[in-house]
Length: 268
Image 1 (cartoon, helix red, strand yellow):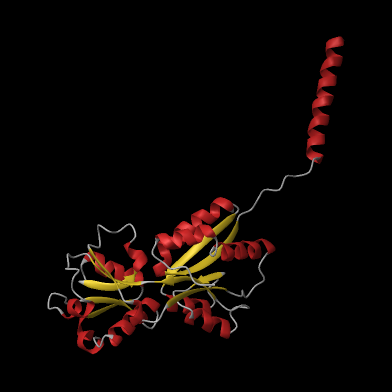
Image 2 (image 1 turned 45 degrees about the vertical axis):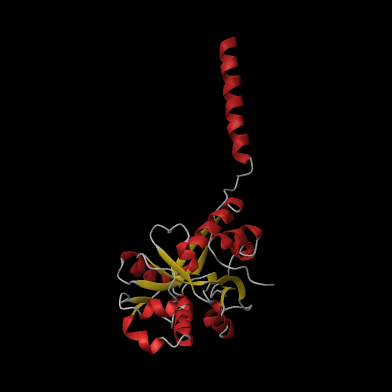
């Protein structure tokens, strides 16, 4: 009889415990907040590092990145692409988006780019750009499309300022972005190419020749970032994540990454 009572008691306690547990507050699981960032092709590698550094401090955020030429990305945004933050290779494209009502705030310069001439061939470094490009050994020169890629525009400005554009235009091979220009150079499809200085970082064995272009021959490459106004309302978590990443681009950690890749820190 005693054993039966004990069994009933344990059964009641077990049932009550399960009932009490069912009444306890349900623990809410943290849901990742995703934001979409459109980034100019020249900034691919530093942006990947910035993203990883940012996520260490903000693990609840998921960042989807779209890379491409600044003009192409601008066109996608104008056609309704769901982009939260746009990092352009210049200030013209994001300024145009702001003027057309795609953002509530004007763009801000997050980096200053540096134009460089690269080749995977062994080339004498004593020659000037003019001597080099006019040489019969240089048959193809890679340049990013100046209509969509700011670094391509800077390259054209340099060639025009040196009086070389008309003399060399039969040698030009145009890429739709810096990424394609870098492919032309690294595969040898082009003998030399104008690209971002950041391309050289970690690829010194691929690009055996490098020559920094005189910054006086092209307009300063101010790279601008802008928050894109969405068609549909964002959640508070998304707004916070976007603002955090925007501010992080100007943090000491981000500046350290910029310098490592050869970018200049914009003046305040």
